Length: 67
Image: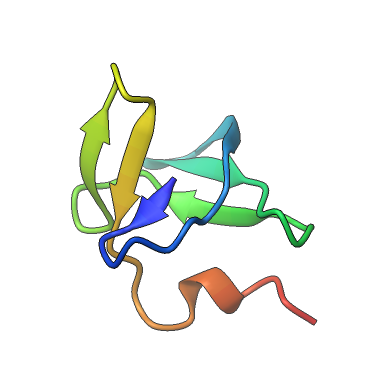
């Protein structure tokens, strides 16, 4: 998974069904996990052949699980 700016976020390890929206469980290289809502507003491009999801995360989404 990468951002629209080219930042590597990490691989998608799992998908959680959470009511009305699925969440992608991403494991960054630095450790921990980040939950990314799988919707059109955030997940801008899904390239199945290239195995890449391009996201446009709102401010702070990638920092939610940092200590």
